[in-house]
Length: 136
Image (cartoon, rainbow, N blue to C red; front, side):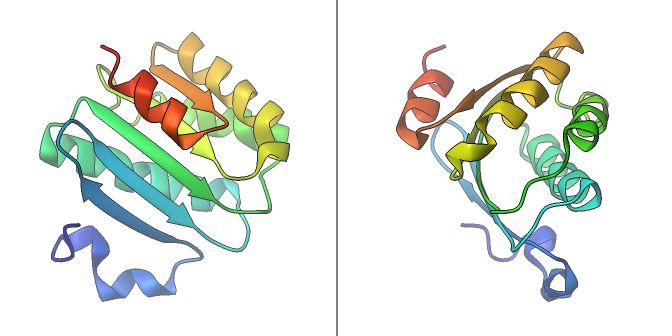
């Protein structure tokens, strides 16, 4: 894990989430956790992921989210629209949420982002996410 990366700085402890980045041999692994989600929290952590992908020139990213309280369907629509403008063009995104009850919401987010030209997929299992990510 790149502990000296500016996005892992001590100043981030004031946020309502914690994010870690690990550069794995074929992709960037991201783990994000928090007590609750909001549109602003999600925007912030997706911006951090985009910045790391651009800095490291990565074309594959696996995001594991561990946030028990989800955003609303309306916020998910807005988030999907926002994500499509964050610089993920050409990046293959695998997204795994530890909370299966959020699957319908995440599938809606996948639909919104894919309809806006991104290449991503939602998974209920982190190993399936990794397999898909590395399949091309």
